[in-house]
Length: 364
Image (cartoon, rainbow, N blue to C red):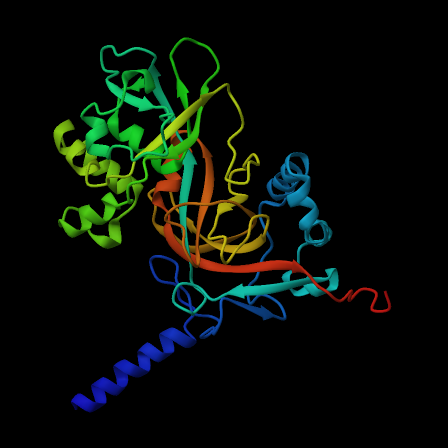
């Protein structure tokens, strides 16, 4: 009896990993069996539907063309082939007719499940001087940044010169979230255009995930961890407790105030929401075109069981973005942050590249 039950369980597991089409709560699916390398060329993606964000994708490519001729020209043939395919109906079965090759990503589990998280550009309320509720400094990069800089805890304790303070916000957690995102806008409440606080550098200390700290301490279950879960935890605790948690991460990010400017990724190209991602460049170089099947979430962050197909370009990087993992840029402000905070789900991704052989005109 035990042997029979064991065989049944193993058989069900094998079915789940090889042929089951039913996704899990985080969107994992197993339509394609086990994959044996990072990128595997397929005759056509095993999926249905067409990209829902064609205009946004074309806008993102236009931004690349306007901002970086080097990056655009190195991917020009692929961009043009994808545009031709997109304008002709974007049938995934016809990619090869437009001289495009599709390479499926192996995924984090080698069954094609690629991890998706989300990021956004926050808008903080702040003042130039310390006053009222505005007590939490945002710092510029020290000029002697080659020497060892203080840890987060030491910075919170006043280890840096007050001359480095660029502004005071009304939330230490908002400051930290802007560090995580890498940049943000600041509203000084004076009716003037928002000031962009761009990434200026780090203090050189190792990064430690406060999400993992909360999980290890039993404060949040692993399956529920997200940016929103961290913020919810902070809302239920006092300033001293929040500060103690943040100090578990000694790494600290500095900012450079600039006049209002478009949000740019590591490639210095303006980002279009839901048409650009941060990637691990050792696998997915800047400028790479991705055809992504992304889990569709409802307004509460629950997976609906449906997917959306999107065309996106890898234009940014992130300290936690390693391997078969993409961070999707969601845009600016609270609503964008709300949806970005939900994402810790899985979908499938195909890298699109211009074919070496011209299939429309083999003699050329």
